[in-house]
Image (cartoon, rainbow, N blue to C red; front, side):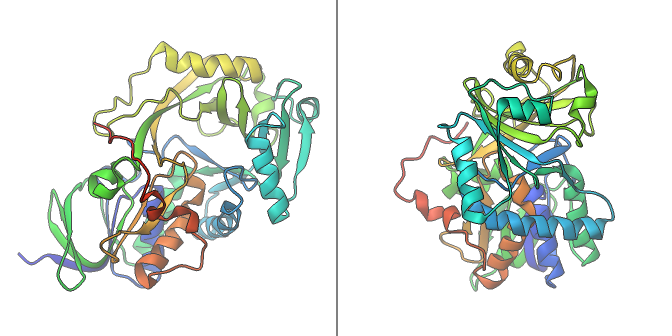
Length: 388
């Protein structure tokens, strides 16, 4: 039987892939989206109700223009979906004055003229009483931060793509792909064979299984989130509690007001540092250490939030060596575009990354500055061993 033919195929329909599917479809491509699990699902990196979005980006100022465009695209998608997807709470970047988070956030604010305030720990507590940080911690408050409803964003992108004619296949894992003579690509799955002019690979924690060049560069890591019932719930509503990321001696933590699940959501970046196989990671098994490392910090810095546990959930980061994204053409096949290694801070960019991937796939270039994300920056780097 002849393979079914499309203009584009997108492999992986999580946060990034669903956005790429939409942007390709809205530009007129006959596009096929392939997802090995359900749409949406809880096996990868995009579940757990909410994801932070923030403008005072301590990681690097070059992310800020991408974030401005991401906000625009999230609002467009929200209008199309007819439901709220982006909730504004303000954002807090907290840490020591001479640390990484606060100086980085202030640098982004200065370079991009972002409205912000610098608050002492006491000033932060007076304004937002749920925060009880020590006196040696500063906080940068940026009023445009908030959170995205992550699963609903995926559904909205896929629904909008389908409205533009995209074909969507769930429960259909890709087993192989190959470049064909003449520049097309062929994709084989457990159910069939498909061909297209262009291929976009957004496979998350499975990226290095589809692109050997990503082995050691897109490394899956187990991540755990806790939700706790606040002792004073009125302090942890979206109206009274900004999202945050916080640098303290115990590590780099992040958190959210109560929303969607009845609890204060709290996490530690790179949790216990566990490199995992995405196919065999037990997503339901939690150790006392998983809970204790989160609860002990919550009790110290957010005592009014640290009531009984209401939920524990596991997901994955897929880390690049420098924790910046990988967005580029395949080094050997320009008709194949790859996005991976979003390192636990990528979800907020899904809307604009979808636009970038459509640009790269269709036009070969993009107006957005993605120099920080090129794959060849690792050309001479020593790579970690791939996970089992």
